[in-house]
Length: 280
View: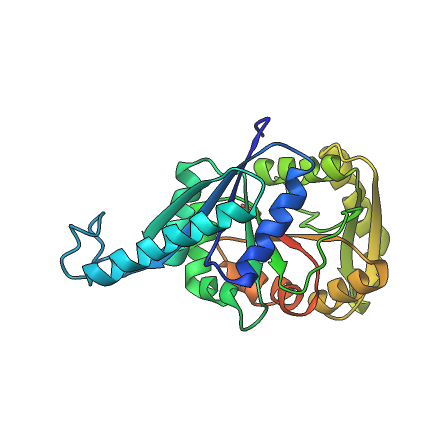
């Protein structure tokens, strides 16, 4: 992890995407950040030839107008924030364009706003999001439109405690966030009736997980529920966590874990900032 974080915020100039900028500003109070604001003008990648002038099969006038409008909105935004930022208008598929930009600029963290099930984040679900996970292992923080941007004192981490190897960049980001906010880390394992007999064994694996990663200022929690998403949500509501951390399996597709079960429920129904990271 570098001394100064490279953070990317995708913006479509809606109030939802501006929520991500609010969280970014909150993070800036804790650490120096190089900010990258990226606006994607969606076009068919097969028709995009690298520039508007060279893309003969696309409506050049329409694309030029869209790009100019984006630049105007960036100029307006610059007048309303008290930090400097790099800006870029890119053309192509939403998710692949963001992943390409992030890899090219060595982005450490992506922050995105979401309106929930019907919001802008829906556009990066399914196969598009699977591609983003495969192309980059960069952690992504999603901020619900109704989320309170407040001091972060408790981090809830739902991890794969039995995995032999953990993603180094993501673990470094989690440790960095904990240190920045001087927060307590809560490791959570959801168990059902079938797990009752090995509860202590599971807790032992959680303890080894924490020790192997050199974690500090943490607590271990076993929470009973027949479904993981409901268990995470219920624990979060009772314990008032400030930021939720969840890993995703890229090869299974982000939809399998993120949109398919656990984090989709959290994004849509649990009004807390959520950070997902790539497990592979």
